[in-house]
Length: 464
Image (cartoon, rainbow, N blue to C red):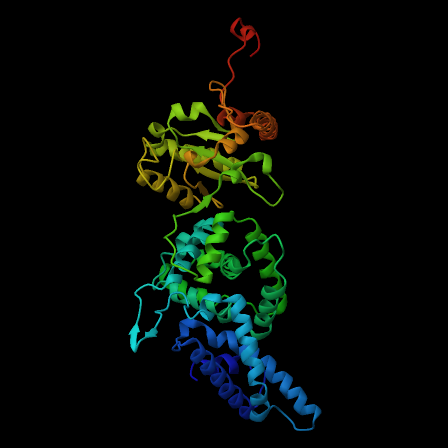
């Protein structure tokens, strides 16, 4: 009652004292019924009170209108009880679509209590605990500077972030805005959003991005109250936030969106994420560039010999010997900043193999690769990604379609690869032409493949 009352009274919009008391009583009854059906104990971290309150108010307005039409005055306890089953079914249906972890009885971040043969088991880490880790990866991908700042908050923001997620931002919205947000999430997620279940975490990241300037100006011990003050007051604000989230969601790497959706659903335990988003091989292909998709400029961390055998069309080679020097890494980031600031381009790190292992990062080591990632994030490079599995994870078809090389002929072991390589060369030439527009300086600094041999005329003093 102590938790539910403020949610209703705060949004009660002028309800008389008797009506407000009836609303609180009905809300507690529905909340208890829901918790009993899920075998859960109440906790504020579940976010159920702020999620349920606007739905109850919607039912109350309907019941009050019916009472006025019948000449009975304002809403009564009897009228609310008559709507209880409809309200309960509505809440269950909304939560089933928007918060499947909760409806599975495994709200993420909460100890899961299950009774088996009379014994109570409380796992130390629920299967859906991974969602919080993936939320930070998502925030580092879209808003790296803000993510690093918020992770330093004292006290930590984890509990409040969890409450915002499970309530579908109900802790940060007025009733009308919250109802509009629920409606949009249920019925208005566009087809290009491949993983609708990941939409709520993206909404939260976009809400944080709205308050980016004020949050970055706060010291760590003031971030928690500043976060709680972020609000959506009107349905129009909810609509705009939803549109921002849909655009951000559609631009996410496939693997990142899928992982956030899986963690949100809490279907099974998940391995801990890497510090940034994984990229798939086809997400580095310049020939597949579309208006809603970022072009990737590859930072190739492989040894010189591997780089010579083949590289991506848009590449800045940073061999291990140079990558160990902080001043060289800083210069490379400065060069990339000139390109990424123009928009539509984001860096992607490429290693020989799995970047999490020393074996997959010859000459560098996994720890140095992680430091390079952290330096890009600290410099505010948004949409940073790392090729999952490194170069060795690319199939022969992907290598033929995307790589350029002068000194090693590819091994064609299946029909049709000659045509694919021809198409890859044409794509590389198109990429060269587009990048050349960026200016002579960038053309000199960044490599699109192996440098062509100097012509005989050039060697004799002619024009190269």
